[in-house]
Every structure is written in C-alpha cells, then in structure tokens.
Length: 141
Ligand code: FES
Ligand code: FES
Image (cartoon, rainbow, N blue to C red; front, side, top):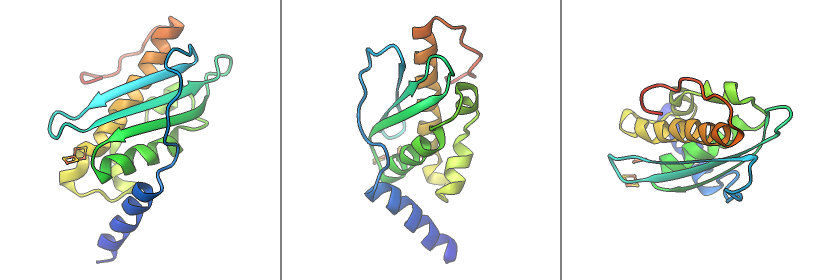
C-alpha cells in the first residue's frame, strides 16, 4: 500500500511539475540532442544537454516528452540527475535507477528505458559534434 502511494506521489509530482522542460538550440555546438522513440507505444522523448566544453560537465538540461506520465516523470527525473555530471558519469545512469526512484511497475519499465536511451543519444550527439571518439554505448544506443 505504502509503495503504491509512493509510486503515485513521485510520478504525479514529476508529471505535474516536470523539471527543466524546454528546448535549446540544436545547432549550438555545446548542445547535444537526443531524440528517441519507444516502438512499443510510439512515445517520443527529446533530451538536450549543454556541456561546458572546457570541463566536460553538463551545465544545463532540457527535455520535451510526448508520451505517458511515466515517460514524462522519467525524463524529468533524468534531467535532475544529469546536471553537474561528466559525460562519462551521465552514460552510467541506468533506467533501473530511474525506475526504482519512481517505483515504476514492470509494465512501465520501457518508459524509463526511453530516458536512458535519450541520455546516451544526447551524449553521442554532443561527442560527434566535438569530433571526439564515442565510446562503446551498447547494442541499442
Ligand atoms: Fe500511451 Fe505511452 S502508451 S502514452
Ligand atoms: Fe510508452 Fe510510457 S513510454 S507507455
């Protein structure tokens, strides 16, 4: 029961008051843009990171998610996790961490996966822009 209420409170809070919703200029060379979709449900998530080119630290994050409440909550929570992180640490963010924090039920796990994919996609985009070598990101990156 407590679990159930916790699930509602956290997801609903991030859903009703999503953090860092917005758009950054995708042509800005310091901005990495990740755009991913979930084939299962058709939901789409765009996540953008603004990176300090000298320190490699993520200084700002914005997202726009066209999808279910869990996907919106997952991306909102992801933006909070990302701020102040290095790119390598950003790549270590697993969807399981997001799913656990928001207490997502199994049927909603792919919503948090969308957030993990969006992070990888944004980092990759930034690194391509910078002409840096992209590390191995896994099969679905
Ligand atoms: Fe309906 Fe994701 S399946 S919004
Ligand atoms: Fe598909 Fe949430 S992203 S239902």
